[in-house]
Image (cartoon, rainbow, N blue to C red):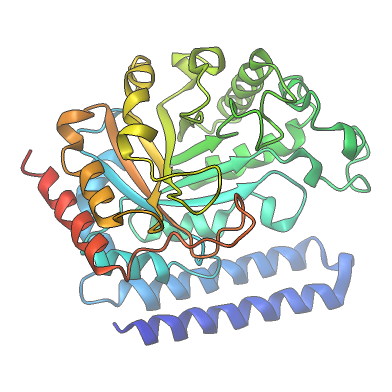
Length: 383
């Protein structure tokens, strides 16, 4: 199946989805209820159509190549202790379909067992549990990984008058989460996650030890409050019957204090860590090696005796040799870092989250980097 055909099918699905949104906008709030359910059903059908036309009709059916993953998906205990390194990827161009993930796989000549998406907390439609995306990922044969970001200010005061004023929510926000203030939202997510009936990896409040970037960090919350919030979220999911969750706890490697923020063995399945080399793109960065970013912290992260997931893995090409960076990081990974059981590529073409300029983490058209990564992944099987 050609790339052009995949794109055309994604565009068709997008047009149908836009039509649904337009109808809902015109008809207003009175359409909620049975009509909303109808559109939800229609959305499911659009998703199924896309999955069928883009994925299942390929000669080399993607899901067939992931049959080996069924053992992990059918036994969550096995998934908590994988015997191989599970690769994956996030791509920011997956809002309307996963053709960009497939393009990356085609470049690397591999199939990703994990597909990563991001969702913020809040009352907007896009902040509900991403059922359609999750079902699509599962239909493709992969396991969904969701980074779930507690942006507490995204709940509209008009719809949620019981919450503190927006400008006061971040300070002590994790204390509120731990005390059940946001249970109306957490329970809704848990109920949807339960209905999936397949493993879902959930990375909640990542980089909670970073005092600068995210509002759930230590500038607004104590480590004890973060732990209490994490445990509460976990317990709510269990109480709602959502026992299909793989919990990924993901501190920032550079800021330490890992043990202070660790929720406990019973509440964590994977230790996640982002490894992104920004090169010389900004005044605060330089060409950091994989050893600089991850290797020197490995022992501190491995001490928890959990499989380690590199949740955001990538390098820019500014300031050094990117293909050598990938090769150095990946070639000896099974031997040098045996606790690492998952590597999820960060394939973001339009990143405006960290620097004043837009930066591009895409590497699928970088022949040297693609060759280095592909060679390393194939080499793992021989080690």
